[in-house]
Image 1 (cartoon, rainbow, N blue to C red):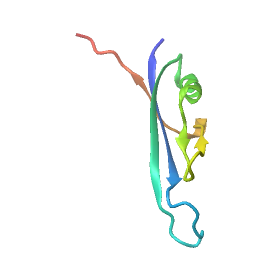
Image 2: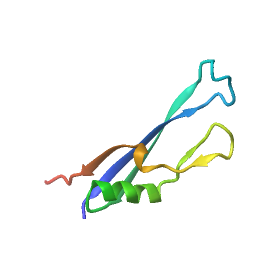
Image 3: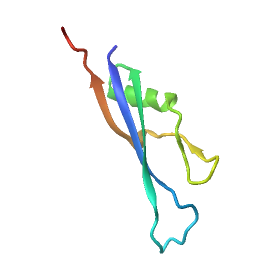
Image 4: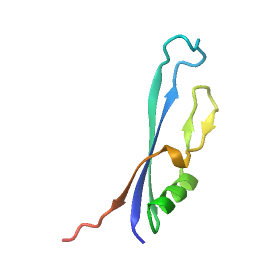
Length: 81
């Protein structure tokens, strides 16, 4: 089976509790996972199960990645000598 590299990405608020009318401070959170799968859709589903997730703005808030947060899925090609 071929290997796929799945990249998850989302924006997370870093300044904690603020007034919605004010400016938010956000950062980009990414995670990369390599999985073996038959095709791209199965690779994303398998990667969602294997990832740790990301931490929210408050300590202890851990969120799991979703299928819709997969930014890019690429197949890893073997180099021939």
